Structure formats: C-alpha cells, structure tokens
Image 1 (cartoon, rainbow, N blue to C red):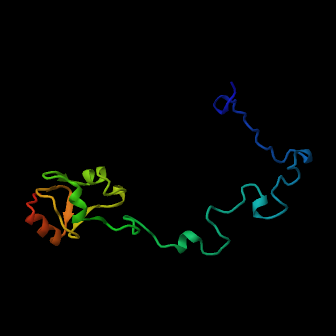
Image 2 (image 1 turned 30 degrees about the vertical axis):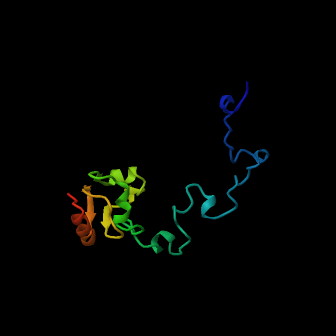
Image 3 (image 1 turned 180 degrees about the horizontal axis):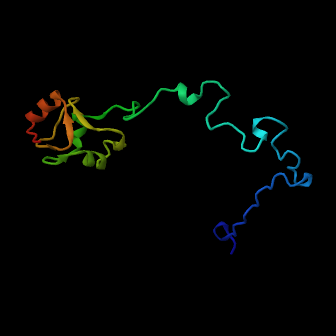
Length: 144
C-alpha cells in the first residue's frame, strides 16, 4: 500500500547558473548587469542596511537576566489551601499541583500574604516568604 511514509525521497537538482541561455540563467546568471553584487566575491555583510544605522544597533542591549519577566513568581497564601496538613510546599510540588508553570523563567517562588490560609503545619522549602505571609504561617504552625 502506498502512503506518505513509504514514498521515495526524490532529490531536486540544484539550478546550475551561468551555463548558457537555454538554462534560464545564462548571460548574467541572475545577478543583473553591473554593481557590487554582480561581481565574484561581491556583496555586503549580513545585517548591512546600505549605510543606514542597522536595526541591531538601534535596539538596546539585553544581557543577563531578561527584563521581560519579574524575578520571582508570586503565590498567595490562599493558593496553598490545596495542600493537606503537614505537606511540603516547594517549587516542584507547586508545579505538580498546577499552581505554577514556566518555572524556568523565574529565579524562584515568593509566597505572599494574600488571602487566608486554612491548612496547618505546612513545611516551606526553596521559597521566599513575605513578612505578612510569615506572620500568617507562624499562626498556623508552619515550619521551615
């Protein structure tokens, strides 16, 4: 049976330029008449825009950390109510429970004091905790 997976791959021959007028690319071989690009070894470097200031030089330099995203991904206390008593809160468990995604873009996780926490005895690992969240967690018996 013939289908796409067992079709033969047919190599297309490269167009041979400058091999006479019958080839369709005779005389000037598609380079036009005169000028820098018609000569052997001619042409301009990559990114050259005819003397105008190139786009790569107009844009600001972005090095190191991306400015597009905040450094830390924020998670509110109310989001932690999906955990059970005594469980560990870490970036891996937050991702497993579907509370965060794209962790690779951020430096870490910061737990903020938004909302109320109903779960007791949560263990926090590898997360930064704000002062208001620290206060609420200490009332519920959190350990680090």
